[in-house]
Amino acid sequence: MRNFSHLNLEDSATVSINSRILEMNERGERIFNLSAGEPTLPTHSLIAEAVQRAIASGKTGYPPVAGIPALRAAAAEWINRWYESSYTADETLVVPGGKFGIFAACQALLERGDEVVILSPYWVSYPSIVKLFGGVPVVVETKESQGWQTNIEAIQSALTERTKMIILNSGVNPTGAVYERSFLEAVLILASERGIIIVSDEVYSGLTYEGEYVSCGSFPEYRESVIVINSCSKNFAMTGWRVGFVFAPEVLITVLTKLQGQSTSGASTISQYAALGALQHAREVNVSVLSEMKKRRDVFVEGLRELLPSAHILTPQSGLYSFVPLTAFGNETSSVRFCEKLLADARIASVPGIAFGKEGYVRFAFGEKEEELRGALHAFEKVKK
Ligand code: PLP
Image (tube, rainbow, N blue to C red; front, side):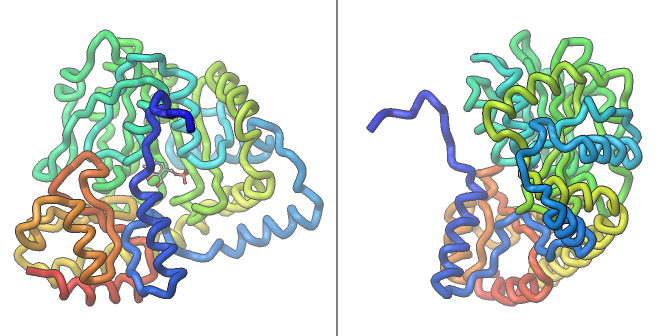
């Protein structure tokens, strides 16, 4: 067998944990799955109807590589209306999930040795994707005591002449932090002065429970430095449909379209019609997901607080996760050991903080049905101190 070490290939921690849980469930073992980042809801009926109409009219051939024109136009109109940006359909690429959008942007832009600034705790895939293309992740830490926010000075001090890109993820997975306009603007000014590209991963934008969501696409003066990634997965509870979007200057969209043409050939046609259905009823579909996820967040976070009254547990402002210090549960300091014990003793699946670059924490996803969350909260009794 050949050696593949040159690929710098790493397993996605969250995807592999979730696959293990699904296997355990298949074997009939009862597991409370708080590991997967999914808003667990059936596909909205308005989306299902759009798909049925598309199938009935035979729309199942290859899609145009950049996406069906109606979807590119609807996606641009959606982001412009919701987040005050000004993208055209030609500045919009349909991809099979936001993750592929980030992957393709890194493939197109990174050269060996390029540094990429990432804020920790970070979504597990950023460092892995960056390394896949020879890039070097440079991590800027954020702290719970500061609401998982940072300041422009911390970003500035991480920059060198080799910095090519900064990845921002407002609506942070795993902390739920949402960045303010003034911070984003300061990063954009810095990036445009230094010729650095901002990849702004905004896939949780529509799951913001409190406060305003500001998109990096809403600053026309810096649009040349910005690539916005968004997706139907979380905003419209469509994880398995695999449709995401890249919004960027047209020259870059042309390059990414070529990359897509030599790799995936685009997102599945039928999924694109599902996404079009979602965007044509965006408010209605999103409100149903948002209100349900807010309810689940409150059930879970309040339940944890009741269970662990002396622990300090933040209410996440967005997303699908509660990122909790291990000190809430006792003396264990290794997040991997803690998650293994939680799985063995309480049958609860979670993700160790170390996978997000932050030891001493654990991530619980609250996108599961309420009864599942209540069952897990009950099972926690077995491990509390
Ligand atoms: N970005 C972040 C921060 C995520 O948490 C995820 C999925 O969990 C993605 C991107 C990928 O989303 P998609 O399903 O659109 O590929």
